[in-house]
Image (cartoon, rainbow, N blue to C red):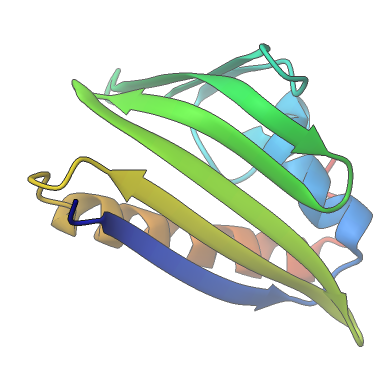
Length: 133
């Protein structure tokens, strides 16, 4: 079966604890992603982000390894996917590796653009404010 996925990797000049919080804590995520956020970052917990235009991403956390990895499902405008984010401490900051898997026939161009946009915001905000919580 053909795989269809995005892979993004960014380095953020901030400790791993602060970067991890940006994917698992509501207040921290709101600084870079969405206008309303509901997160319960435990296996089986809710992942929900509502954007300014009303578009909503809904999912369920599948795996949460503190300061290392999160995996969650995501349904965005009828498109189902699985997002895996890994966090690696590197000298002076944190490497974030994000992989989003889709069905083989899914057009992923808008998701590619969206992650570039939002991860860019995250990278700038966290580096500027060492504690976005």
